[in-house]
Length: 327
Image (cartoon, rainbow, N blue to C red):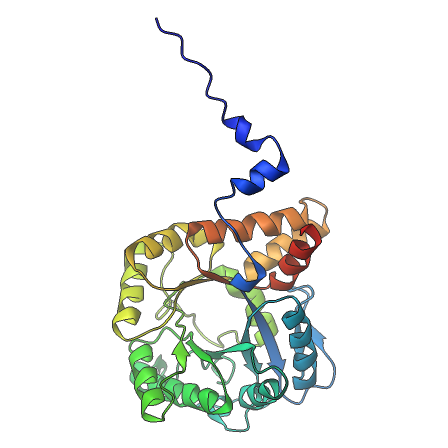
């Protein structure tokens, strides 16, 4: 029997310099998007136990926060608003003097190069807490998309670079694209929450954004985690409607879908590493059960490795600080 020599793959792992030379996946701070929560008429920052170090901010606080984000070379933020007024029609969401509209205008005075991505949804602005408008006890899809388009246009008027519809209403991308174009905002991009799954990983977000549904759940419009083919169809529909950036949400339990989506469609792909993913790591690290920096690095690299071009993550600042410490 012939004797084969040992294949010594470890040769290319011997030193840190060799390991860096052989690196296949590179994740940089400029691949990240940092979520920010801004609350109307807020005087002091508000924290919630389920999201350590993530706070509701005033507009003034947001300007200071973006200063730090800018210094870390994180290029983009995603804005979520918490209004003072909620009603059945979510009118605060498209008010020209609404919390998001005023925040965008103020940011652009100081940080013209920061990419502002604005969440376009109704859950924070309606009394029901649902992502669409209610008619006769059910979500009225077609009425909702008209309102979502009004919200998107109001954000573009304020200066948003990218609008990000997250309501998972059928036809939301095409309706928003048409209204943006008709209003002259042909350069405003759309990053849709294309395959947003019905997930328990959103629980901490609902605490900090005050947007838990007051009745029922969101399973009639968010995708079941049991249906990967349906997720792909949702992404394809958004592409056909003219989306600029597609998104898979959550990220960590959906790496297979991130991979499949990137292999199937030649489109810029965002992955949203959501609040529950953040909370699990933070709470385990606080107990001393896991090394926090190393886990953050590993998790975010896994999302990039799966195929995400950009990652929306509450770890954006943590990762950037760790990255610059190492480099």
